[in-house]
Length: 180
Image (cartoon, rainbow, N blue to C red; front, side, top):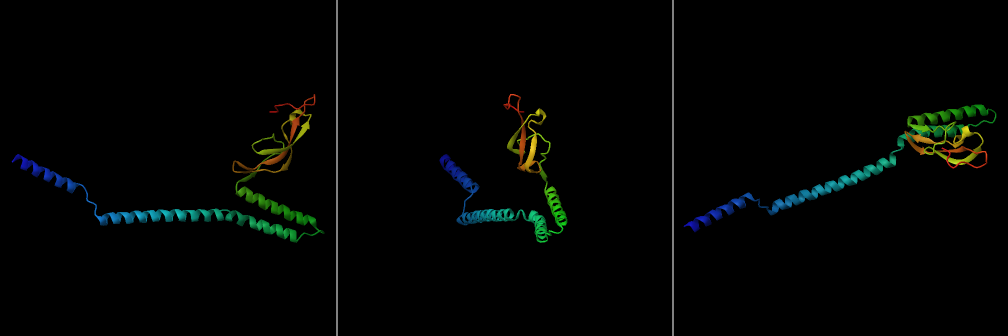
């Protein structure tokens, strides 16, 4: 009788285990598979929409800046159209006005012109295009002349200034190796 009782207990234990472990029906599996496929499709659509939005943003990112610059372009065209040889000073006044318009817009966009006049040469913000020898030791490594202005956007150099730089010439005619 003990064997019959133990068999009954084993059978009862197996039934409890079967009830505890979930039985996946085919319909449940298909439902989960459909949910997975929908979620995957939603993710792919979201990625496509993100790419589309990003390319649209890149394409039109400068629109506001262009809208502020286009009136200046129109003013330049008008100044050119109305150039008068009999009264060039009024034309120059118009050009000064347009230059000031440009300066104001650059200032609004946080673009700063790099100061080079009476400044020591700075290789981070300037590009030396020519070295001019000098006998004055105080002028060594100073900017002699600005060839083209440079600009910073906030604190980043976006266009280095091109300059001519003084270089002190020793009395024996040679240039020192280290001029810092």
